[in-house]
Image 1 (tube, rainbow, N blue to C red):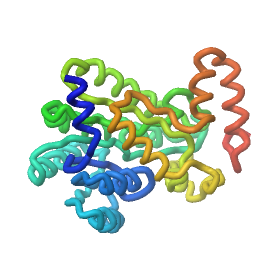
Image 2: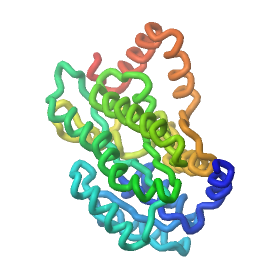
Image 3: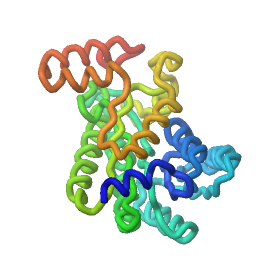
Image 4: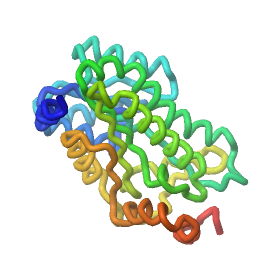
Length: 279
C-alpha cells in the first residue's frame, strides 16, 4: 500500500491543495511551487487583495485557483474554507497549514493577549483546518503539512508565545501521524530556520502592536522559495520531519545532547539582535 501511495505522489499534477497564509512569504511560495507542479489550488488568508495577485500568478501555470478569505483564528472560517474547497473540487489531497504570526518580547513584559493571539493563529488555526479537512484527507490518503520552526524544537528567548505555539503544533501533528499511521495519512512537519519574509515585520511587540521593522538582515536569510521547494519535495517523498538550514539542524541535534550549553548559546545569539528585549 505504501509503495502505491509513494508512486501516486511522484507527480502532484491534478492534486487538490489548500494553503493557508498564502498571501505572502512561505505560503505564497508554496502556492506558486504547487501551481508549477500542476496542482489545483485553494488559497486562504485574510488579505484577499494580496491573494488575488498570488492567484493570478498561479493561474499562469494553467491550473485552477480559488481564493477564500479566512481568518484561521475563527473555527467557522476554517470550516467554511474546507466546505467551499469540497464544493468546488470534490476532495482534498494536500493541506498546508502555513498561516502564522511571531512576537518579540520577554514573558515578564508581554501582555498575555499576545500569547493568546499566537496560539490562536499558529496552533488552533492548524487544528481547526485539519479537523475539518481530515475526513477528505483520509479518503485520498493525502498530506497534512505544518509549517513549524526551529523554535518548535528549542525555546527561543523573547519568543515565548511563538515557541509555545510551535511546540504545540509539533506535538499535535506527531500525534496525528501516529493515530493514522495505518490509514495512509501523510503528516509532514517542516521546521525552517529564520526565513526572509514579512513575519518579523508583523511580529507583535509586548503590547500587541506590530513591531514594523525586522531586527535581522533579511537578505542573508533562507528565501521563502527555497523553503517551499523543500516542502514540496517533502510532500512528494512523504517525509515526516524536515529541519532546514545548517544552524537549524545543528541546534536541534546539539540540544538533544547538551541542552544547558545550548540554552546559553541561544540566549547569546538572540541577545545580539538589534534592540533585543534581552539587553
